[in-house]
Amino acid sequence: MAETTYPHQVGTLKDSSIPPVQVIDTNTPITSKQVNELFSSGCSNTILLIRSETGDVHRGGFFFNLQKTPNAQYTLYTSLDGDQASATPLDLSTLTRLINHIVGLRFDAEMLRYCQNVINHRVD
Image (cartoon, rainbow, N blue to C red):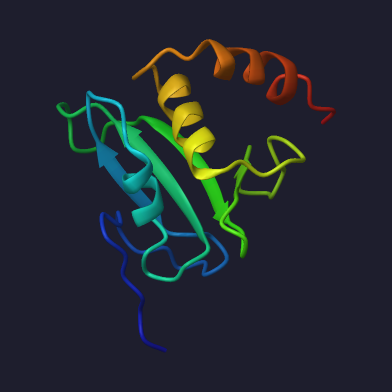
């Protein structure tokens, strides 16, 4: 079986059920174009890791488990186990704003309310 590689992929995951990890190193807000490009290989699932531009090569960051739906909506999962952060998929613009807010790259009052009222109020 041929191994699939993805832009910015970190390592190779032996478990094919785990989506590829793609890294964006940045100190500025990401764009919708960058988020959309995560799915340019045709893969509908990915794990996005956003880290600061500088630091140790093995530094951590903010992980986002994402899935692109057939109708160009995006589902955010809270874990690799498939728990959705909200029942409603997000459009590309909203997802980008949410990621930038969570990472601390751009404060967004609407996304703060979304986190407080939707994501943080899930019934686990």
